[in-house]
Image 1: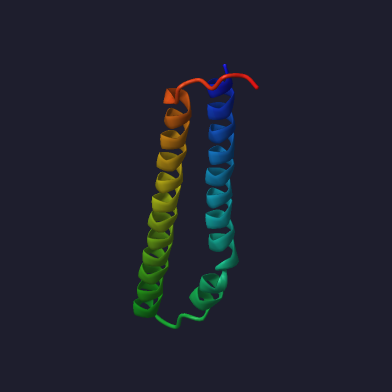
Image 2: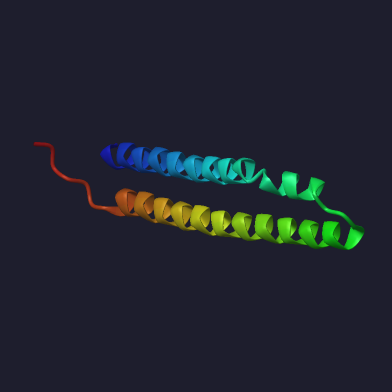
Length: 93
């Protein structure tokens, strides 16, 4: 029973970390509204397409980095929870 409680605590903490990472990603994309100002300053189609390409590239790179951090946190959370469940029970004190 203790192992289940410990694993649940680990999972809850891990999910908090994952949620935090997703919030940081969303905030970083929302804060990066400079692209909108720059889009409004484009004088021709070539500049507009070049900027749009850069925006997509930046967003994709940020997403992939966030996804990697989320994956690492999730893997560590699962590993720790399994370790807690697999650990031999300890005698009550």
